[in-house]
Amino acid sequence: MRLLAFLIAGSAVWLALSGSAVADNGPHVQGAGVVTDSCAGCHRVHTAQAENLLVQSESALCFTCHGSSGTGAATDVVDGLGYSSAARTGTPGALRGGGFSFALINSANPSGQQSSGSNTSGTVPVLATGAATTSTHSYSGADVRAWGNGAIASGAGPTIQLRCASCHDPHGNGNYRILRGIPLQSNATPAVSIADAGTKVYTTTNYWSVSDSNGPSFIANVSAWCSTCHTRYLAGAGSGDTPSGDPIFAYRHRSNETSQGTTTCAQCHVAHGSNASMSGSYSSNVPFPDGSAGGSGSRLLRINNRGTCQMCHNR
Image 1 (cartoon, rainbow, N blue to C red):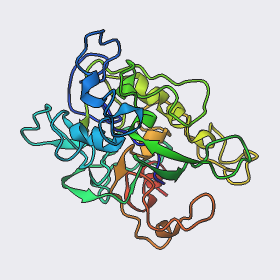
Image 2: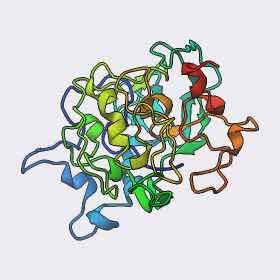
Image 3: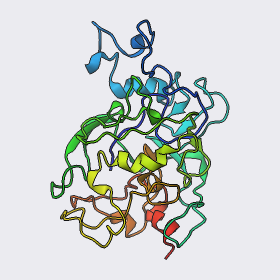
Image 4: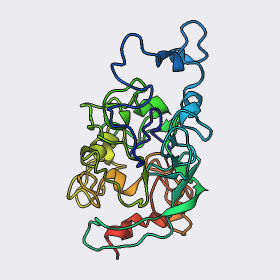
C-alpha cells in the first residue's frame, strides 16, 4: 500500500542524524515573524505555477531540498539517505524511514529473535548501498486507497490523494517532524500531537530500533497518529481473538503498545519506503484488503517475507 507521504521540512518521519535543537527546521518554522524570508522560498503571489500559490508542484518543490540532488536539507528522502548537514558532505547514513526510490534496510539479515511476544533488542542492519524500494507511501497526489480508514463496516477505505503536506505542515507547528495533528483528508478526531525531539536525529544503524531517545513521546504516540488515517488498524490486547464487527478488518493484531520492541505501527513498518523482498510463495501473494491482487509489494515492512512476525514469535 502506498499512503501517507512523509517529507517536507527537514524532518522525514522517525529518522536519525543529529540536527538543530529548535522545534521546527529550515524554512518550516512556526511564528517566524512578519519579515521572514521563508515565504518567498515556496510561494509567488501573482506568478505561482501550482495550487496554494506554489512556485512548482508540491512534490517537486519538496524535492528541491529533500530530493536526490537537493541543496537545502540534510535529508534525502528519495534515496533514503541522511547527511550531517544541508551541504551533504561526508558519508551519509541510512534514513530511519527509508526512501521513496531506494532504502538501506538489510531486510534479509535480521537477528535477535525472541519468543516472548515482544523484542526490545533485535537487529535489522543497514545496507552499504541503497536497494530499490518495493513499497512506498504516496507523495505525488495520485489516487490511493486509505486502507482501513472510516467507521466499522464502511468498506476497505476511501480513495484519497496524498502529498508531502498531507502529513507534514510546511509552515511548522512545533510537533515531531512537523507532523500534522490530523493529516489532510483523514477526517479523524481528536488530533494526535507528538512532542518534538529536542535534538533531531534522522539516521540509524539498526532498523529494528524504532524509538527516539530525543523524542520520548514519539513511540508512545505513533500508533495513534498512524490510525488517524488507518482508523481500523489500531487494536488492543485480545483483538486477535475478538471480532471487531467489521467484515474486512475482523480480527486484528494488537498495535497500541507504547515502547520499543512492542506492537506499535512503527515497529513493523517504515514511513517512506521499504526495499524488503516478498519472494516466498505465501508472502508474495497476500491480497489487498479489498481482495485485489497484492503482488509482491512489501507493505512498508522492515523484514523480508513478513519476517517481522518471527522477530517476536519465533515459531
